[in-house]
Amino acid sequence: MRAVTWGLHGLNLAAVLGLLFISQQLLRAHESLWAMAVLGAAGLLVLLQFSRRLQAWRYVMPGLLAVIMFIVLPMGFTLGIGFTNYSSAHLLSFERATGILLQRTESEGLGMDLALLRDRANPAQPRYRVQLMGDDGQAWHSDLFDLPKAADTITPDPKAGVPLLAGELPAEGLATTQRLDGRALVELLPQLQVLVMRTPEGRQWRLSSLHRISDQSPRYVAVDDDHLTDLRDGRLVTADHAAGVWRNASGRALEPGFRTGVGLANYVRIFGDRQFLEPFGRVFAWTVSFATLNTLLTFALGLFFAVALSWPALKGRSAYRIALFLPYAVPAFISIPVFRGLFNENLGEINLVLDLLFGVRPGWFSDATLARAMVLTVNTWLGYPYMMILAMGLLKAIPEDLYEASALAGAGPLTNLFRITLPLIARPMAPLLVASFAANFNNLTLIALLTEGAPDYLDTVVPVGATDLLASYTYRIAFNDGGQNYALACAISSIVFVIVALLAYVNLRFFASAKSARR
Image 1 (cartoon, rainbow, N blue to C red):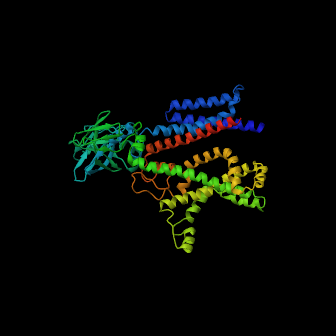
Image 2: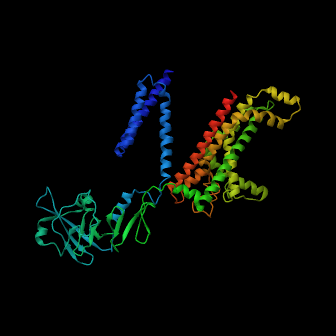
Image 3: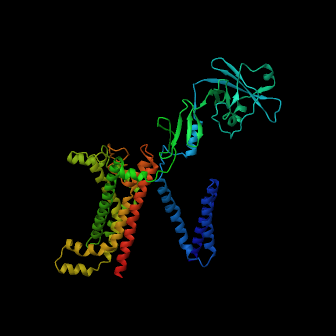
């Protein structure tokens, strides 16, 4: 008991230290409200450690915090993203996307060689000149100027910048200055990157390499928060907050887009747009079929082996039991790739045997029906040992007298199965079968390692295949095939979460009611 108490103290101490670290990271990210909330949770844990009145909460608080950290917060974040347009084309905030447009420049490909000269008069507060030689042979120079600060931003004002004067630098200017070498230029590079020079006709020049500048005129200038002016034609560019993009005068969306709230638009796309509804409906139907069939197959196979292993006349039952349990002991990320190799259409051993015996080579990964059959077969193999162990335990609880009476009445094995075995184990097995259904509903590992959703449908606008389950379908939309539509994937994840949560609720409510009724 003392070891358990000290273990609990250690767990709480680790949780407090972890929360303090998270709070410190949130403060560095200027998330003061979240930091205070995490700090409050850490204080609550400390209070629980020293309060005898709250002693019972010590045992449940780590679990509650884990639920909040790893379930509630991620699910809340997922639900929130589902109401935005967050995707690879809308990664940035509105302010950041606007800033990128304002920093965009136009260039005619002109350039000049740069020489930076430092004034010798006041080394403590140096001033500088530039001497330039254009590609057309035109020389330019400047009067003394102060370098901007590295934190300064480049203004789109066409009249901003250090004025350049035509011709070479006069002799007295060369005599009072010192030309900087490459090392000195590297030290001044942050300031040189925001330095703008301007020729008399208004063309602006900026640093393009350590010893070169190029003509770079701003493309846009801000009018107000929601309007920019395109300096090439003077037309307005308007922020479309509903779509999360800036649009030019002709209505074309400019890149990059920005994140914005879209309300129920992602859910409307899933259930209202035929291009999304059809693949979602196919995947949902297959997911329900897969979860149902797999639950029944694993239960049937597990029960069959459990009944066989309970046969008294069977010798060496322990060895059989260990052998039949082995598929459950091998990690899935090892077993599934092995099956992927066995079912390989060209080099797999299964097709080699079928070709030798029947002269056929089934397309396990190219035919939708065969691919689904393969997925069911592999997952049944991986899942039946769990059902077998459960069924073996339940079979031992059935009184032998029932079977003896049934034998005296002349009943056969099937009568015993349907009249005695199944009715007696059905009730305790039911909640486990529902849990197995829910687990198969979210089975991403099997599809990701075995088929990757193949074979793909060719008539859809989103990446989806015949063996995709909702979990793998969501993963592909979010991260694969160039889609990267995180918001749509989060909306689908929310739907899956609701379905699984309903299953859990029905499971708990129905079987809790049944348990109460039995009392």
